Length: 379
Image 1 (cartoon, rainbow, N blue to C red):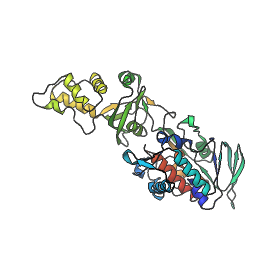
Image 2 (cartoon, one colour):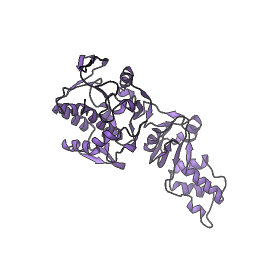
Image 3 (cartoon, rainbow, N blue to C red):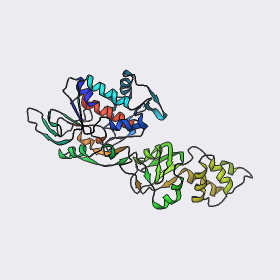
Image 4 (cartoon, rainbow, N blue to C red):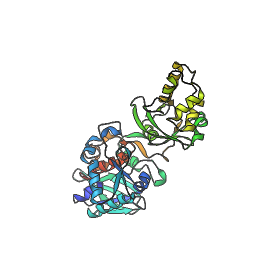
């Protein structure tokens, strides 16, 4: 997007990609259909040490803007849950769209090019960067770093963007995997992981400092928990903290047991839980969390536990399974309007390499488009 916007301004632009083809991460996104934006995108849907930083870019390149581009290229799309927009056919449609826009803006694209060294040779009168690559040496007035984060290393993720930032004295907010499955400790693994593959709707929350709650599906895996609700909560989770799960959102499955002359025993409680949970999960819940008794007080506590299950993960599945990287180039180092470094004129950082991380569901693509457009309009 940066290349397109800069090229439209008449700038001579070369796009360097170390991969053999462009858009590899776009191609695998959204199950191969690319969740290219979210119509509900707003600054509150992003994590950053400065929660206000993303506002400027997001306001000046909105979901409507990327949608207009998609419609210009006659790409069929559809809305799934919670405002998520996907291609009907394939993520390749988005890559092809971007390639065509780059061509129309006279952007030169070079793939399979490794950046070996970047130096600032600017003087008081001129800006000049010297870029040594496997394809030769390039001179540029402006450099936009759009190298992504550390997630999914098998797709070629590297720390190049962070190394460039550190080389020029920019601060880095500690990086960590985000939108990532959580791993149980050994005891919880024994209790739950034989139920691998079971899914149920929950409300998940993590972080006592910012208790954002997500109502979506949770999936039990052979190592812990995943599914959209867990991935969302994982971005806020800190090691050693519990996550809290409501297994029966807005429901009171034990209500029948409080009626006059109701049968109160394990069988009736199991039947009640099966009304809101998969059968095997209902049975396991009763085994692991049996009620202390069958009186009203005990049943009230039992149902409350169902709505406030607190479990402390042992960790995450790491960058290999993380959808994005949280942390990155400190936003205090960048101009929020242009994405330009405050210390090094002509050096820009955009997208995932910056300390701005979106929710699951198209938000990170929207940040990529918006921050890229901002830099391309000024570089």
